[in-house]
Length: 137
Image (tube, rainbow, N blue to C red; front, side):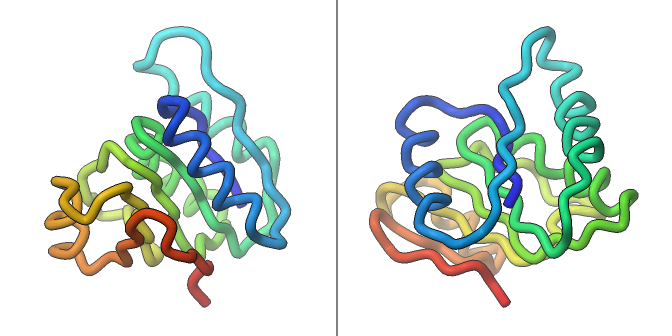
């Protein structure tokens, strides 16, 4: 599992709890210093350098989810298969021609969250509150 940087403390705490509940090897991409405009390039470079073994679960929370389309392109270019994306309390990125290329699970705190309609419209898995999460097959 690759855990992207970003998010507020509450979202990061929720993501950490979900990640800790599973048996997978976790590689956490360190928070990025410097201008936000270069974050996606530096995150992608860090992932490619780490050479994770597919299939991968890519996890992000809050504004870290905005990096997902760029990360998907980088992983695809490196021939690394993504089995699922897990996003917690996300700032949703736009759907692109390369993302999502695997199932997406979105975790929100409240079923009344404004993201819920978008998540359902896109056909993604929605988890509310403490719903259990299990990576897609």
